[in-house]
Length: 381
Ligand code: PLP
Image (cartoon, rainbow, N blue to C red; front, side, top):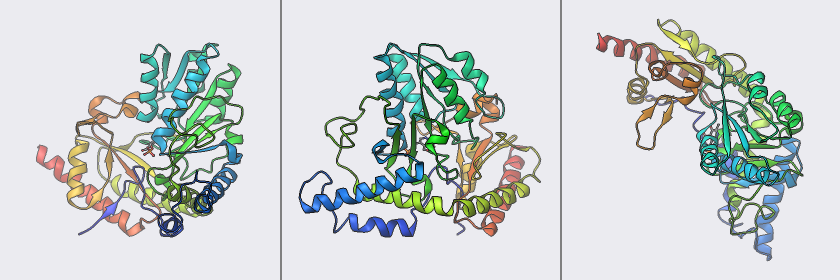
């Protein structure tokens, strides 16, 4: 049966080369990276090498790189740990964009429950946070501003450096969730002028369950996971050595091949879009600069879950808005924030291409997409 995976914004397959580099750390080099004996020293050596490599790719210092269990933990930590530290300076206002990943929104709501004032920044109809929105919301009380680099549902890229400048002019910390940007845009923390930045290995052909929080030196942030002195006393827990090695290897490979990969993926997106644009009532959600992989489409008159499950039966894997814990599908908060109605948001799907997809596959997927849309519309008549 056809199997065409078009959900790379959810996760990517592990690169063969990365797996090869990780494998010895599951077997021969299994020591605890905190043990002082030779087995532990071998493990910590690998972690140090990985940290040096990640730091170099970000233009950061190794001491500014903290390994976490993924993007969610890094996001929770940046927002909660950053806000707690700022509270000590008397700043209890936090600003996050309305289109953040739930890992950031959860943290913001937790802070609100604890008495912090939280402002959700609106986006324009293209899905971008406008600088004026931040200028209007920020006060001298603002301790932290969080705006993601690229949105996970629309791929829209945000003006991070300009937003960070506004935050800094008011003495606030600036954090960006770069989980969806990292596979496609090289991260240069100095150019971006951010205080904190997160990303996750499984979005760029690395292992699941491993991420990074970059914390600029001098920035104060409270620890989030306690009970061990790992990661310079700020993040407890036995280091996941194979995953850290894998994260660094995946980031190196991704950075080295980014230009060609982006060209290839952009082409796939164009080919797919051209083909499905022939269907009436199909439009793209999101405008302006976007990461090449993500295509968010509204298909008028078709419920996104029906489309997802019907495509699934044909071996085509795509995504829809936000899945609730109950398994039911809520309309995407991102699309609602862009001004789409609940009905329009529930007619929207996300297709995300990856480096291993071929043009032929994408043409085939687009043809099946078109047929499925037509059949679903026919049924409703
Ligand atoms: N932030 C964004 C923008 C994401 O897309 C995701 C994952 O989908 C996360 C955070 C969470 O990352 P992880 O899956 O590593 O916990």
